[in-house]
Amino acid sequence: MISIAPPAMLLSLLVVLLAGYPVAFSLAAVAGVFGMIGFATGAFDAPFLLAMLFRVQGFFGNDNLLAIPMLIFMGVLLERTGLAEDIFRTLNRLSGRLAGGMACGTILVGALLSSLTGFVSASVIAIGLIALPAMLHAKYDERLATGVVAASGTLAQILPPSLVLIVLAEQLEVSLQDIYRGAVVPGLLLIGGYLAYVLIAAWRNPMLAPVGALAPDAGHSRTLWIDVPLSIGTPLLLVGIVLLSIAFGVATPSEGGAIGVSGALLLALGRRRLTLPRLREAMDVTGILCACIIFLLLGASFFTLVFRGFDGHLWVEHLVSLLPAGKTGFVVAVNIVVFLLAFFLDFFEIAFIVLPLIGPIAHKIGVDMVWLTVLLAVNLQASFLHPPFGIALYNLRSVAPRSVPTSAIYWGAVPFIVIQFAVLTMLILFPQLVVRAREVVNGPVDITIPVPETAPPTLRF
Image 1 (spheres, helix red, strand yellow):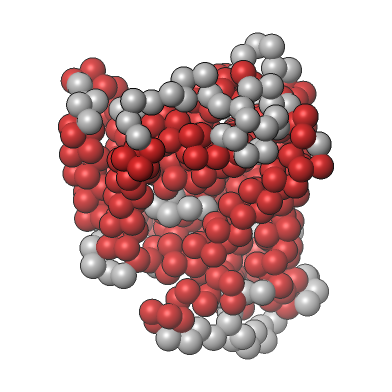
Image 2 (image 1 turned 180 degrees about the vertical axis):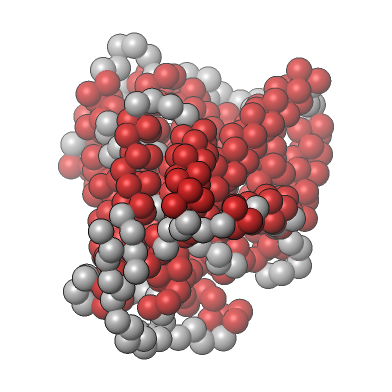
């Protein structure tokens, strides 16, 4: 038997969020009110709510979550010490005289910087400050230039060691190592799609990306064969060590993050870029981001606890039982719902509110959770790009010159959203693109688990 409390909780939360209140406190407030209602009506006992204490304890002992501060600190530290600027200048020297070469270099910088920062906003802002002025100075089309910057920054969503992948792995209770392995091919497909679009667009219309354009400060005293290994090779080596140590179980995620921080400090010291003000700034940014994530986790966990106390998971199961085509229908429906919600909610709101509700259902009907997690990561990547609440667009608007109209930023993102959904469609049609990497390490993975036949629950009004 299911009461009307679960849909009432979701509706109340939506109203509170649209009223503009902070997400973390909105989740906790709605959960608190309905928790008192549940206790007063006898839906559950007061000791049931004490389970929240054990959830909090579990957060601070979770190895995936312990990796977040380290990985954020590594990325912010490298970004604050000018590493991204060095990478862009070097790639610009390599490809600047190719039609669309500067845009291709920006995409590659975005891919590498995304692996270093693991955070979309940090990547978009850094790339926007470094690459956008150079492309505009080189007479690149405003739509193409802004679209390349925004899309390149969102690669932090899918490329390990992404903060987003860590959050998704925690919310859907999936092995982070498996997620990292499964995200490699989709990430490469996205990078390849972006590069192909830029090259084709520049070939069809050379005015979009003039040939022979170099950044105004592209000159460098070092020869290219020295600059490439120093500016590009060392960051790649650092990322490779961190990812491989985590993906193959040599180090836990938190240990891998510690390795990354140590390498970042050594890299910054070696280039004489590490100063006390920069170090303090990186630590302040890391602390603020981690505090925000912790508050979101606590609020979302309290909301989920009360929601399950009202048998909300059974209500969600009932809705899923109405979907056609079994597992395929479920996966397609979930991706459609997440895409539509992203027009109004940001990534963290969706991750902490929606995913805990669908995760148990996906487990129950036999959906491969790593495959589903990667699908959602690619889907949510589009949420950073499409208006009206695409956070990457807001980040880019904050650093773009005022001469660039907001409409150009919005329209510039459209082709890259199309590419993202083309990749998402490929991943849905060919799950082996995700699970194949796991088979190399873990052996064959069965993604055709039969769906158990269960009677749909009865609604009580």
